[in-house]
Length: 468
Image (cartoon, rainbow, N blue to C red; front, side, top):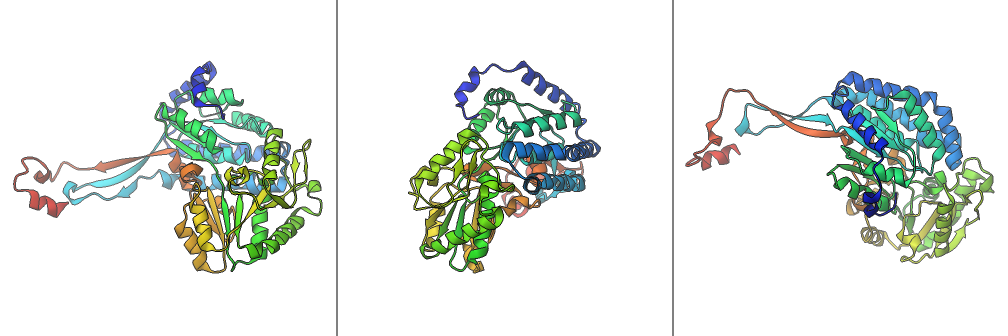
């Protein structure tokens, strides 16, 4: 997927891909997906399939990423049930036209916003949360009355295979299809015309997807990433701060888009903070993390090598142990990394946590503002005014005070990035909205046809000013 878009034209279109898209488009054009009962039936079918295949999904996540059943349920499986429940409960209300206002000059009139399904959609999901980040957008697509082709990542093959069987059993191909494969399959899919492309992954590949979509003027939702900072104020409860940051950083072995990417901390607190991070890691995973059933593994040898190279950019305060054959890389804290180093320039996406000396909140805000807008930002302070100032003076896709990552679980809030960290949002109603076109509608009767708006306009300026 990271190949240049210039290669796209050289990739022959797969007749199977083209036929699949045409099949879904023909089905969508029957308008059968519009009624509420169709959408509810699809969501219920998805829920039944998810429950039937739950054990296989947990096994697949263990095979792909060494996730324990508990972590997999906490971070992937459980919240999908919640998303489906929310959609089933609210889809009728989401479908209702939303009332707007009409100016005096066009009265009598009623203004509405209709939610039209966009149509035939492509969902490209990543490997780090391969189940949750496939299913969540699919829920939005079905609730909105769309069809979907899902392309899971080839780097999580066990989960991809279960998704293909599970969704193939639950839905006819014209409603939901799963396409497996690598770069060539993704390129062939991107060469087709879609009504929406929903992509979750890295910024580099996100640009490729956006360029491909632009050829057909296809709207996109891009859920990307970036370097999500933690700002630690002197007033913070340092022990709780360390425990929460350690959890958010090392869950899924650091392979989380909203994981803390670095910590800005006053220099005099750094030594104690390192000790508290190490204490938290021991309490989570024991003295020998490699033997813990709750700690994951790096997804592939290539990513293992990339993380190993990044770890050389500073001083290892603790951790750093690794085993290439098993792709185990210990929770690691790094200090004194040059700000120009790859560790501090690239999204880490692994269990490395750099600490950066930062004397005060002014310096922290300047540091964050000098870099691309992150997907998430975390600020820790007992002083609520400090946290509020950070929220007000920085820009990020989402933010949390005195914790990390938990905003992702808030179904009532849209989740997404800003700038280089993404475009668009989803979860709950935002998922429905992402797969819908908001059509503005004004309804008027034939009575009271006000002549003020019609030429000739001579002498009407005063009246126009009053009405408008």
